[in-house]
Structures are given as structure tokens and as C-alpha cells.
Image 1 (cartoon, rainbow, N blue to C red):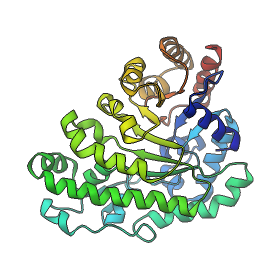
Image 2: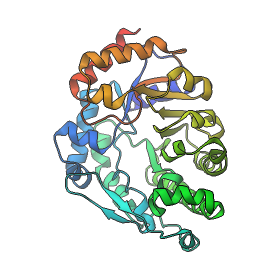
Image 3: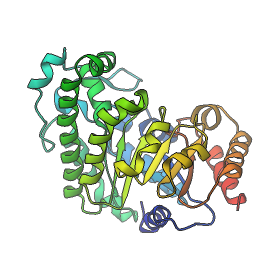
Image 4: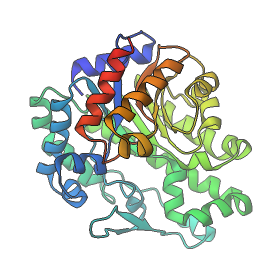
Length: 344
């Protein structure tokens, strides 16, 4: 992000009203690779492809907040391999990983990774360090430290079905697992900021919190997420959860979150009511049905409908209700920006 873009984000988070409303999109490998006509594998493994895809997005639409901006990641396998999870890279598909824990009895033996040396983390740091001169020459800075959340990582380490069953049958073991992972997340975020002092925001991606009820949320989610978001002193504390997010919205302030990307399935006004007026909301046009499968006119209509229903225009970034899909093409991005400008 440029200094101007970062200033826009900070002003929005502080509660200033910007006119027109800022537009921002959470973008990762699939969208970036598609925007350049490259394979996902090339985007993940080739520094030149990665750098050019990010540079193209920023240069073509400088008024868009591409979040988190120059994101060095390997999708869902960015973090679990640090704990020993085996990576699976299907040809032409999205990478995943296999569980490393074969039951709750293995949790007690799980060791917290070294964030400087383990898994794919050194490759993430090396990519950013190697590309940093080109990023800064283009007028941008590395602004965000990123990590997946404890439940998301834990689900990969134990297996998702096994993880949720264990929440009922072995709650103490799961609490221990989440504590170890939360320590790792905090250390990983802190190490990124140590490597790149320009970092002034953190992004935590945690969809699995949307799969639990409120009692379990209070027990298994809230303490660990609050510890993570309050451990790093930065002005932007960004949470992505595009699964069921109404319970999450109620606890954003208690967790320390001040920027929230949520599902298109929730009414913006309802999320605002639950979140309160101190959290910036990033959303929430349907990513698949409108941004991917719709026409530019569908995009204009959906953005206009959203803006017409906003209860308040402070602390709003107009966006997708989740990640930007690969089929969100230039003509649709232009339509999105046009509809936002015309809204006044």
C-alpha cells in the first residue's frame, strides 16, 4: 500500500467520513494469478510472477485498497506445515495439507514451531525481503503481518471433523492445542513486524469460528483471539471470517478487532448493529454470484443496492463479502468503482 492508501485506511478506521467511500478487496493467490493469466503454482513459486501480479493490480486501480497488499502466502498451507503437516500440491489445484495429529493423545507432544526456521515461513519472509526494493521503488510499503487463526490451523492439524468432535469430547486437549497455536500466531506476527518495521496492521483469517455456537465461541475462540489481537501494538487489527459471522460480530470489540470482513449472507445493517459503531466493516457484495458469475451491470446494481441500505457511511469500506474471486475481471472492477462513485 502507498502512503496515501494507508492514510485512507487509517482515516476510515478512525471514523472519518471519506467521499466517495473507499473501495477495498481482500485478494489472494487465485485472483492474483487469474488477473495475470498465470497458473496458481507459478504465482506461489515464481517471485517475478508474484511481483508483477501485485504491481499490475495496484497500478491499474490505484484507488482500490488491495488488502493486505503484496501478500506473500501459500494459501491454506501457509502455517500448518510449520507444525509438521504434509503439504499436498495438486497440479492445477489449490494446495492443502494432511493432519499431523492422529488423535487428542498426540496434542500433548505438539511443540510450538520456530517461526524463523520452520515450514514455509522462511520462504514467506525471503519473498518479501527479496522483493522489498521493487515494492518500495513502486511507492508501496509492506503494511500487514498475516496469519491464519488458531481454529483454522488446529482443524488442519487434527482434521476438521476430528477437531469439532474433540471440542465436545476432549475440551481440555483442544484448549491446550489452541493455546499452543495462539502462541505460535503471536510469535509469527511479531517476527514479521520485526523483519519489516513498516508493518502497522495485522490480518488474521479465521473462518472456523463461524462453525461454533455462542457458548463454544466464548470458551474456545474469544480468549485466544483476544490475546492475539492485543499482543501486537498496531493501529489496524483486521479479521476475516466469511463463514457465519453474527456471533463473531458481537465480540469484535472485545477481541480487539477494528476492521472486519464478513459474509455476503449477512445483512450489512445487522452486522453493524451487532458490531457497534467503532469497527470498520469491509463488505459485502456476493463474491461468487455477483462478482464472479454476474455481468458488470449486475455488479453496479448490487453495489448500488448495498450502498442504498447502509445505515451509516462512516467506518465502511465497500468490498466483497469474502475474497475477491478469480473471475472478478477488469470490467467488473471498473463497474464496482463507478457504482461507488455515483452513490455520492
